[in-house]
Image 1 (tube, rainbow, N blue to C red):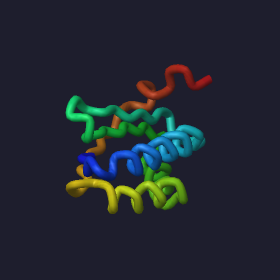
Image 2 (image 1 turned 30 degrees about the vertical axis):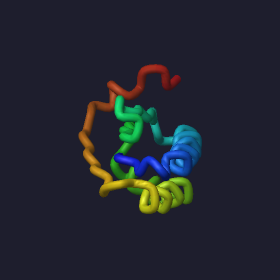
Image 3 (image 1 turned 60 degrees about the horizontal axis):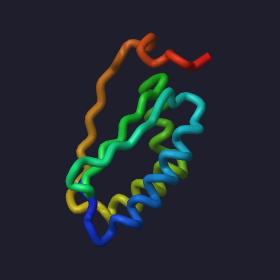
Image 4 (image 1 turned 90 degrees about the vertical axis):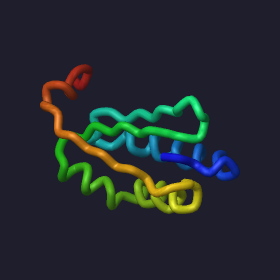
Length: 95
């Protein structure tokens, strides 16, 4: 996600809230964000138990709030990619 420099603070506050709120979701195995070298581009990685759980998460208040902030703070439309991985790859540390 490419963030407008003048909107960076608002985006970061919202991203932190999103990460905290999503990390606590029951069916989210892992969530992480990375900031690229330019300082204004971010990548968020989320690992969900099922596609249905991810789609349900998209309707959650924390996800909707983050989407609203992204509309005002991103300098270009967000790119979304997803892949399926074997469940065994996501179970390490989930006892």
